[in-house]
Image 1 (cartoon, rainbow, N blue to C red):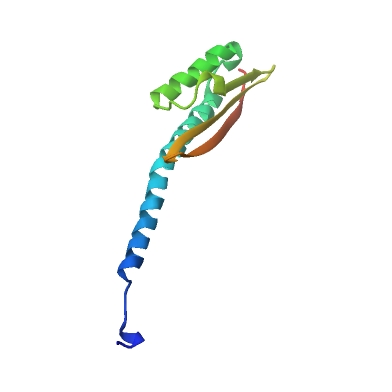
Image 2 (image 1 turned 30 degrees about the vertical axis):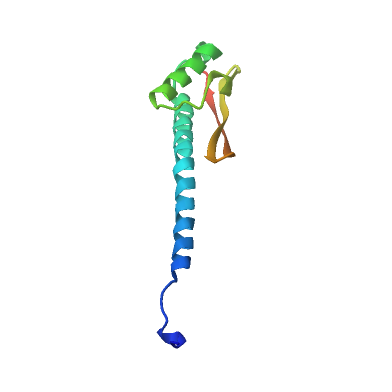
Length: 124
């Protein structure tokens, strides 16, 4: 039997447990990160609507179509017209995109992530 100060390193079982834990975290990361990348794209599109001229002259349907076209260019498929809410007042246009994404993780375990992006843009 060796003394404790000569024993170094991990056992085979502890290496396997460590590899399984790393693989589990990697799978979760690879499934969730594309959802957040799409959310960043949605946020960019909604924020860019602040710089859009003439929003007060456009109908709510036209504004929603503009947003959907820009999301289509960015290949975001999780947002539909039902997720876009537009409200106009005399001086401002309030735009909100409220949606959730459901992705399967393992077997019958799903992850559900909700996002809400909104801006108040001038109606000029």
